[in-house]
Image (tube, rainbow, N blue to C red; front, side, top):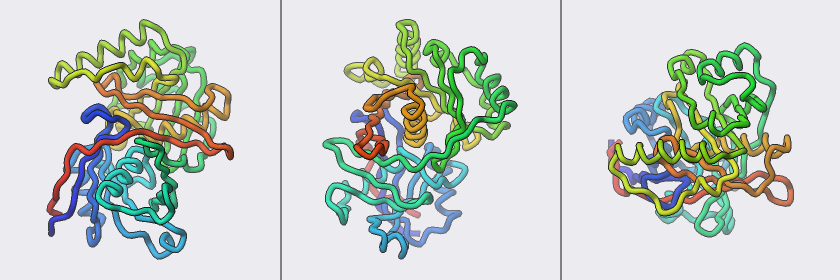
Length: 311
């Protein structure tokens, strides 16, 4: 064991404690898979990352660094908020990209581009594979969420490394009221992302109330302004199969939702997604597309803890 540089970063927020936290070990050299997994389980955050030199193939392709991403229970080939948070920590501690304002990250799905856009970083959404969900699985998931078939506008299996069942609801009140049976979702082995495009005053009141209650419980102070009021899409993510009942802000899910919803005409880019209000968070995700149709997923990050960890 030895001391290794470490940061804990809050992602998809400019205000500490209102996004999705990420533990970043900035030198993962020499650690075994078991040691990485054990530390990720110990941090008990939705994800913990370990930054490493690129592989020989990655370096030849231009990669600036390699990252391995772990939940408390497993390794992921890709995840969004760990991509942005790891890149933020790497830059903050002196990382120099080989190609100007574009950083090339190597991870389980291959190479992921990250670009600097003012105070924000944005990653290029990896290729998406999507398909119609199995009818029995869809029915079981909706039952676990307490949803009726008439409330679901569209559903898709979404796979950009992580695999999500995506549900689009027409009623944001229903989104705000979801109280899942997490044990059932875990038994089904299916992560679920639920979103709603349309908004209503009653839904905003529900979200505001749950956010206030969460903040009152943890003693935190309200963020100036209300990011959700400007959002075009409201998102919630349930990931009990990997030990995360509800994820505060989820980059990989927002990436796949964007690719699906834009392609099928439910939304047009640019747009803003809001996630985490039901947990007392104010995650803000910026979705844009470039001239080639590439979806970019962006957000701000802030370092909350900086020091060393013994591993």
